[in-house]
Image (cartoon, rainbow, N blue to C red; front, side, top):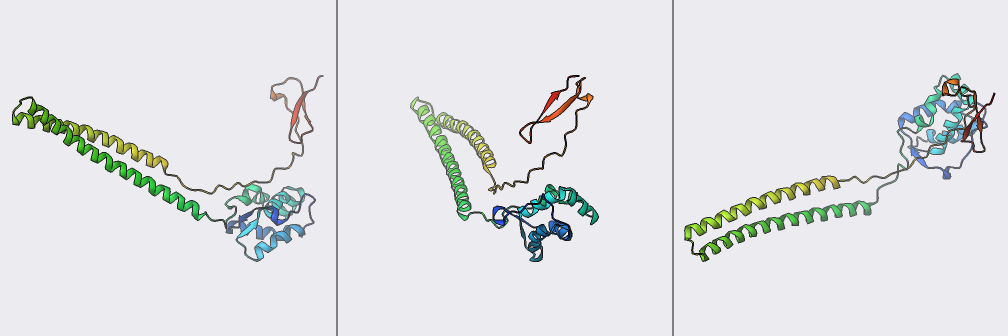
Length: 243
């Protein structure tokens, strides 16, 4: 096995999350096991030997860090392995955090009860609107017939006026009910949501850049420029070089 690299650190399993170990990830890990440093191989071996379906994420993080070191790149190339296959994105792609976690039954039952209550409430509103429309049609027609009869109109004219009034009210109620039904269906489609468990995966931060290249004249400055690192390891500032 290769000698341990100084950049490989150890972390207790309890301080790391657990991710799933799919088949496509098991193959490259099995291939790299003989090449890994002894401490890192000891961390990885139990998950492969026991055919575990999960693996501690800190083990994958240690492998990605080692694969970026010069010793790791040389060892992988000597074993005819691609170092890019052991990058952070390649190892964590397709994995799921806390795969053994399950949805709370209380949350799901509460969601189902809320959906049923919403459906019953909508049905009651529909029945109420239909009943109101029927009473409105009958009431308007009867009122028109009674008014015409009281005014001295004949029976035929009074009945005709009552039927005509009821027909007009029925058309108006049908239009209003159609508009309400379309709006209700639209709101149902908008309110349909899926319950999802959102899990945040924090990938290891990239190491500091090994060197900062000097700016070229194409940067828009006629005079030469150089970079100077400040106290913050992730912050650089440009300083004009006065000739």
